[in-house]
Image 1 (tube, one colour):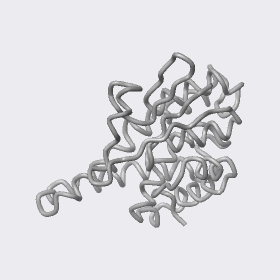
Image 2 (cartoon, rainbow, N blue to C red):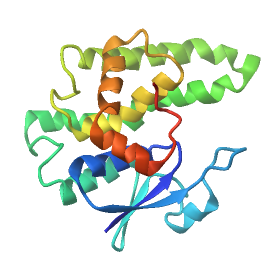
Image 3 (cartoon, one colour):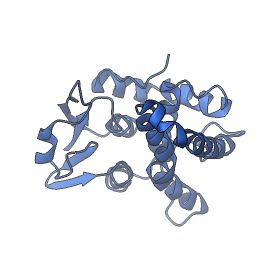
Image 4 (cartoon, helix red, strand yellow):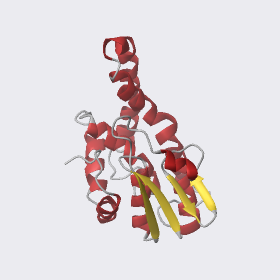
Length: 208
């Protein structure tokens, strides 16, 4: 049985969504952020030394990092669903999206969140951060042009990238990106997403 070590308001929400889309049985072990620091509680270190979420256990196996978890679940429990066939051209694009989400797209958004807390001290960095956000969101916007999902059909690439779109929405940054905005609304309306949200609990990145 897969156990999702689920931290509130975190990337682990998309792992719940993945499992719901696949119809895979799982359990949730919940952890709450410190209300002051917003950091994960130390209990997560008992699961993995980094003390981060998402992390899953599947029997004796511990898997961390969103992309690795998604890849693991798809290979072990997906039954050929939510991913293109291995070796196909579409699979190469799929693999890039799995890495791109955290390897590139989230970096300027994280910088925006942290540097914004610095007030005037962070001003010299704002122009570069905004340029990088525009660069990456422009890329995603173009990839969604004329299609509902990143690969044409819903795949785990959309699930992995979902956090990027939701963070943009949380900071009211989607108006300039109509394709991304429509994509976020589309996946948030999916029954599996809604079920995962109910099971995972309140999630501040959901936009009405």
